[in-house]
Image (cartoon, rainbow, N blue to C red):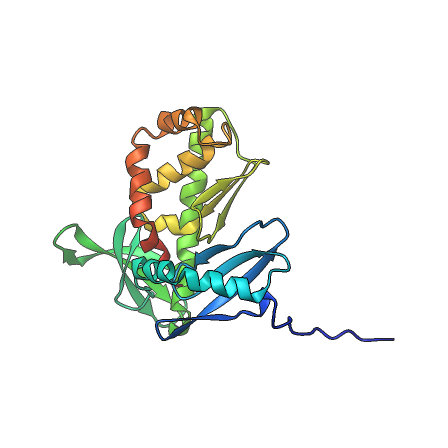
Length: 256
């Protein structure tokens, strides 16, 4: 009986590329081969720390390295545009539904929850909102992320069903994901997928996202008929759409 040993990719294959040197820094590179790809496509991850390049299956290393070098200026520009990474920590402020919440870490067991602290008043918005997080400090970020996921699910399920009723449609499933290239999607089977990070944004932005994806249950395109449906359930959709384009990167800056 023989045994098969996995071997490293040939050095002349694109899959052998693991990093790209830029301005004295080595950026990690993930090469994805795709049978349907006809050209090279490049994407910077949401932290600005790494690159993902999709290439046709069997692509060679040389042309891909040339492609990366040719786009060095674009990579540098996009990295500058990325907001600095933010990490949940005791005392830090994190927006929840657009409202800043002060993170308060507490040792011991307990359920992450929000409480208004009347003893601390913010000049612009009255009593300070606090997010109380329990447990080991090493797990603080994960616990904050888990709380946000639960809140996003509550909001988006409620809003999706409400807009669906208005438009006479019904989603098959509603799921939360952590996507970097889109805020939501609607599949041909009626599954609505949302990025749970949208719960960091103001309520009207969350509502717009739900309206957008629910409208796709009627119109699987972005034609005039689709936008008419969005406007029916979210009249100020264009302003909310522009907010997301302008501020969306700040939602991805949080690292949990």
